[in-house]
Length: 203
Ligand code: FES
Image (cartoon, rainbow, N blue to C red):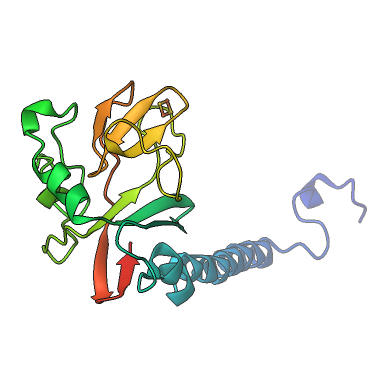
């Protein structure tokens, strides 16, 4: 018998169809099993572990911040201003009528949307308490994203005593609300809470 025999074209020696089917099925099963074995670690890796959660929040010691001072920290790659306001700065912010505001929205992540931009609503943390002495803001100009001046000593605080963005001349008041210039919105208040009297957790 030779391999040119038509009867043997589909069944060369050693290639029993039943055995081929078995090998084929086994190969698929092995591939599926292997894919599952690879997928599980990938899915597992996608669950945030403690180190990832730690990166999403930041605890800041504010015990050394004096009245009238401000500090800048970074949270999730963004600057955050924490300002310990003077009584005069608080009073100035509280007395601004809503009708004088460019942006009437509090833009406070600790409150539901559509809340008036009163100074109380701008200084409310996630526990629902307003702490007027402390103002916490994402320190990014809402025009085109520059970092406004007014946090470090001696910097230009603008016409309303808060912050000034020199990029195109936006002025923010002592509550971080836009009062003049091209910026359309108040600087946002990030989620935060007081962990102790001298520690703020952002995020
Ligand atoms: S980026 Fe601040 S005024 Fe343009």
